[in-house]
Amino acid sequence: MMDGTLPNDIEKIVEADRAHVWHHLTQHKPFETGEPRIIVEGRGMRVWDQHGKEHIDAVSGGVWTVNVGYGRERIANAVRDQLIKLNYFAGSAGSVPGAQFSEKLISKMPGMSRVYYTNSGSEANEKAFKMVRQIAHKRHGGKKYKILYRDRDYHGSTIGAMSCGGQDERNAQYGPFAPGFVRVPHCLEYRAQWDLSGEEYGQRAADAIEEVILAEGPDTVGALCLEPVTAGGGVITPPPGYWPRVQEICRKYDILLHIDEVVCGVGRTGTHWFGYQHYGVEPDFVTMAKGVASGYAAIACCVTNEKVFEMFKDDVTDPLDYFRDISTFGGCTAGPAAALENMAIIEEEGLLENTTLMGDYMMDQLRALQDKHKVIGEVRGKGLFLGAELVADRDTKEPVPEKQAQAVVADCMAQGVVIGVTNRSIPGFNNTLCYSPALIATRDDIDQIVEATDKALAKVFG
Ligand SMILES: Cc1ncc(COP(=O)(O)O)c(C=O)c1O
Image (cartoon, helix red, strand yellow):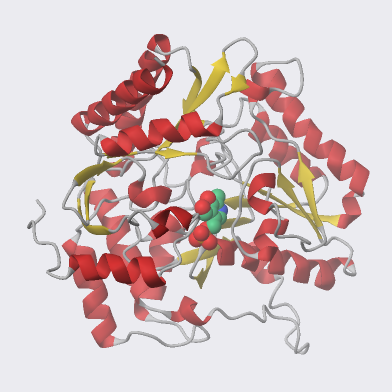
């Protein structure tokens, strides 16, 4: 449990925050009269704010990150020991935890072989984009430079990653973007673009990617970048038939497949370590961040197969031949030291299995809520990664206004339960409630989260 002590000068701290911190994703005008929220402490599934109020965290640190829960002393101890031994050396050299974690990680990813360390999901994706561009120059006379991305997917906050971003509201006002990124349609059957369902819909959505490739010219397309399950774009699980066809299309046109596991990676979807492993996909690049060390240290990885790696060492006489990239903080040793412990905890506590069991349980509970509240149009997800799309009318599927969806989140917060909602994502579609409790969640935790949602929906929608 929390030891109950707030810092003595908590009021001064709140004042300092209000005066000087620019919060992420936040309109600050309300802080001129109200208080910013400060999270002071965390244990297991729970966090405490500056008033000592306890909350159950159903979104793992707000953005799907703290997968093994708060207050893990063994991760903190491993990081401490490593920092005293060696905190940093540039990633042009190896490190002990870097070598150990790479071996452990690759043992969970059959078919993959190399780990490139960086420090954010955006940056890991940028590395893959740069590799694709360099391969285009090395192998295809610069021609196969285009990178395809999907409507509703997100790959990060840098201008490069946003150029590859399928969320128009998130991108608004930040252009112009980098050239060479091309959009393909989403695969959300609930908002189907074709009058098909199930496997037929899945194959049609994948065929739409082929249509884009043919329109652009297959000799200009180097890679396809996809989330295994779209996260911030509305928790979109792929329809049956989608992935096999996607893989087939990539092989047919010699297009590298980049899977963004920043949210799904390292256990979030249950049973398997990575989202793509549910669908038999064989990627060329896999990027990951958030849950790799559950937020105990900043670490992200761009993992490639040997085919990609080989292309960066085949002409030793050419001074431009290798991957000429550095990430200063990719050389911090705290990241892999924390990631090793994080993975050991998931194994020792059987958290992949717990995620599947509790994910199924939560899905059932949310579907029961759907029977009760007609405002829930669809519940979808995989493992402990779930979404409930709210609609004003089940027949027309008109999304509820975002203020109402946000009122549900605010009411849950007042009840001491932190849930999420799609935010500044797709214009008019900030209407999907998001749940991603830590992989340690119990039935009681889930009951508490679902009960709060039930009450909030009753209050906001009657
Ligand atoms: C799918 C996906 N990719 C990439 C990112 C970017 O990660 P980061 O914020 O660590 O740069 C995110 C962040 O939410 C994400 O959801």
